Image (cartoon, rainbow, N blue to C red):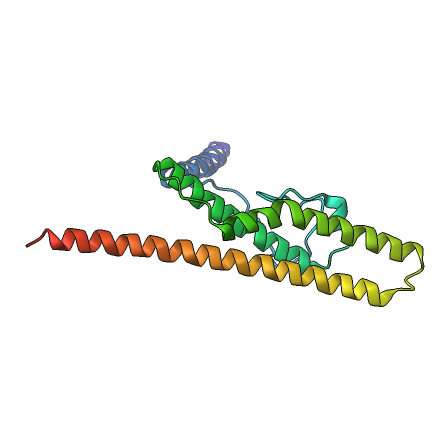
Length: 185
């Protein structure tokens, strides 16, 4: 009887062991790693300590006074700048050096100089308002509105620039297709 129980235990342990090894081997073969899925809630409030910028160089202390939608908009702007920079790097990898347009120059100046300056000014104004017991709520509201307008302006400029890049690439594809089609005859 004890021999049958021993064989049963050894069989069960061996089955679990080989099953686990097979499960990991299957995942490794298809290129994924097994583990616990981590759910990322995109609607959760952004944490300044976990917030990292890919392209923008912004001081975290200047971001403390921003609202949640403004932080999300800054994150979107950063992602769009990353896409734009990746496009520029891919052109350089193809040994194409596009001329910098005035639109691109102005946007670059806004992103890397004016935006940090405005965030610093907004931060200082918010700190002044704190020290005067929020006596000037109108000024704080106006500062938030001005900052929001700057964010909207930058995001619109980025959208236009990305759309322009997209249409330029589409036009190049059309030209290539026409060239190939013209040589089919």
